[in-house]
Image 1 (tube, rainbow, N blue to C red):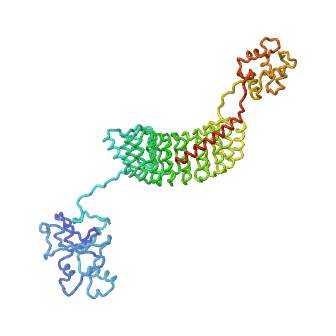
Image 2 (image 1 turned 60 degrees about the vertical axis):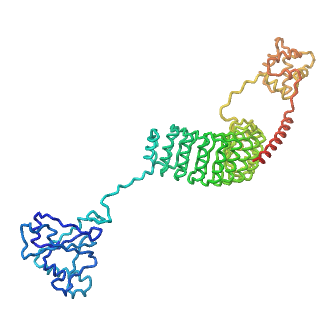
Image 3 (image 1 turned 120 degrees about the vertical axis):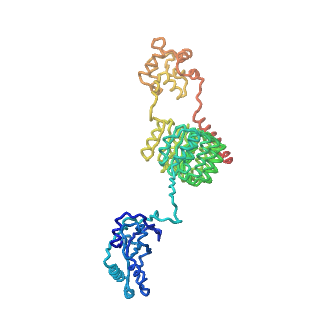
Amino acid sequence: VVKTKNELQKKNNDVSGPSQPTKPFSRTVPKTEILIDSNTLNDIHGRNNENANDVKILNNINSIQVKPAQEINGNHENSTQKIENKQAEKEIILTDENQKSVKWAWSSEEEKKEENGKQEASSTDHLTSVLGNMKVEIEDIGNKYDDSDDSDDWDTDLEEDFKVPAVIYDNTGADEYVKLCKQYGVTPVSYLLRHLHEPAIIMKHHGLGPKGAIPLAYALLNNTKVERLIVADNYIKEDGAKALAEILQENMYIRELNISDNFIGAEGANAFAKTLLVNTTLRTLIIKGNHITDRNAAAFAGALKANTTLSYLDLSHNEFGELGAISLANGIADNGNLDVMDLSWNSIRGRGGVALAKSLRLNTTLVSLNIAWNGISDVGAFALAKFLRKNTTLQRLDISNNRIGEIGAVKLGKCLAVNNALSHFKISTNPIGNKGVEAILSGAKSNEALKVLGLEEITVSRKVHDEIEELMEVRNIKIFHGGKGGYQKPMKQVTPMELLDEFVKLNRWRLIDIFVRLDKDKSGDLSKDELKCGLKETGLEMSSKQLDVLIDYLDKNKDNKIQYSSYTITELFSSSSMSSELIEGKFLLVKERRLSARMSRSRTASINQQFKVAERST
């Protein structure tokens, strides 16, 4: 700021009338004020010498505005002092992008020819000489302004006089949830409000109901935080299920959904089946225990064919039958992304089991299949044994409690011998018997990939139990069985009479023939010593104490002699466990092994016939 002495004195007085700001540019820059008299001002503008072009402005000067000092300092006539010789004061406001200083360049024509660097120094010296004895005060007022684009000092048509409030986007849906709860007349769940910003919401057994599920669903419409939603056992029914299914068509952040035990029914199931047609982010869908029937199976089959992202589907504890299993099998066969399928605890019978087994021939991605507690019977076991031979991707198979018998177990054992993909195989709670267990163990010995074998709730003989223990030692395999492990009921005490009864049955003898053979003198009675020695010679395994108990029981008269007449023997053994037919010699044992083999062959032929019929029908 360059000012005269008089101006400095006027500066000290309170003169009203501040100057109006001008806006040469849209941004505010540091300013420098120079106050000079009229003659000097004319010299600067070249008015005293029209031929002289003495004003030189450097490239860094953006604008110049000259104003009389009156406009800056207010009304000059009201001031206490007057300026002699009618001097008019002017203000030159210079603006430069440099915030620290503004430089004036004033030179003669001779100096125009010099370089730009020298022009700045010479013009400064010339300006000082022109000002003479004037007192110069320079102030840098650039520090009063910051470098930001502060446009509050200027008024243009490109700016608005008011600020638009910032809009805060709620990406959790909490505000929308509270609003909808008020609309539906339900109390907001505080747990939900606290966890809407977290990646997982676990709300089991909260009793939401249909009205409480709808606000939750629409709150998640724009939520970008939740990836895992578990609302099992909340009785949301059809309305709540349809609301959740609808938002999943828009929400692309939720990857896992569990809506088990919610009574969603047929309408809710169809809604989720439609969602799977368009949703591309859901990876896990657990929809068990919702009374879904065969009528919904076709919709899920279509969804499995179209969906390419779902990897885990749980439809257990529902009401699918044979027709539903056939429809789902078509979807599984055409699906190329599903890893885990759970259809346990349904009502799938033989033909449904055959259809599911056939789907394994075409599916190349399924890793785990659970069809336990259904009842596919030996027919389904035959189908699994046939189609698992060529499957190379299925690693876990659970067919527990499916009414599979010995014949089905034998077929599955042969399949295990050639399949090298199964690592976990469970056939628990099936009446396969010792022969079936032996067939499974035989196949497991040849299967190097098998790591876990489930034989729970299957009682095995001592021989089979030893084979299981041996296989576990030789191979790194875990076998769970229902044999000697765990709690066992105490064995019942066997009486000597029961031992004799069992001995006679095993040898297929008549009891009267034993006594006649032991009676050497044909007297019709036996002494204790004769009976004791004779029973030992026949091979009866009984301790001396047990023999003494048996003989004391037979000696009713206590005369150390045993009468073995027909009447007496019947009377003696009437209270025992021996049958009267055996005692009288009228009972003949059926040749069990021959009969069992004949029945097995007949059963196998029947199962094969049923399997062929089921395969053609599916």
